[in-house]
Amino acid sequence: MKNQELGVNKTIDTTIQNKMAIPKDKDELHCAIVDNYQKLTTELSTIPIDLAALKELEGHAKNTVISIHDVVAYLVGWGQLVLKWHDKKNKGLEVDFPETGFKWNELGQLAQKFYKDHENDDFKTLQTKLGNTTHEILRLIEHKTNRELYELAWYNNWTLGRMIQLNTSSPFKNAKDRIRKWKKLKQHF
Image (cartoon, rainbow, N blue to C red; front, top):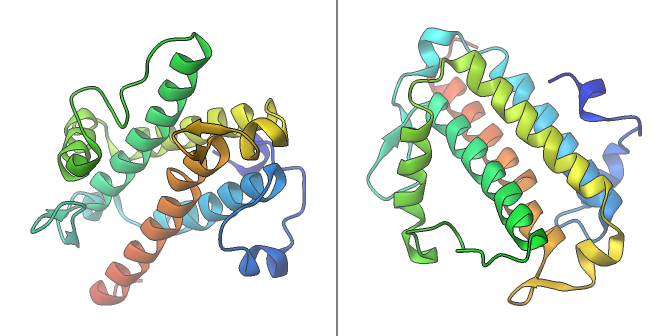
């Protein structure tokens, strides 16, 4: 998605953004997601589709190797989980954290599920899904107060804002860094 489609009407102050390790309020969370998403999509836009499927990156589970396609599937999977958690909680339903059938010590297996869920998506479609999911999360943030995001425990001792950040802006930055490292090794970019 283009920056305008993400609802980016604010100018991101890169000086503040670079100093900000963990967002502490609604505006910082929004800026962190947009900034890291933009940097990630810039990296993704230069990858030829045929190279996106090469399994050459260290995987999310020990002793695994994944592709850039898998990295994007992982990001889509976590983003969609954030939206699912929020939807279930809003309906007063019980949420299986992190996901039904998975425990927190089984995140490697959950990553494998995300790859499988999106293995038939072409790379462009997967990038569109990432943009749409990110847009939905930004809309969710927009409709929440700072209190709802950062002053109330939402899952155990974690706030909703922190749970969103842990599953969006931080993994976006990690993915961007992985891709840049891979590009340097490939020496095509």
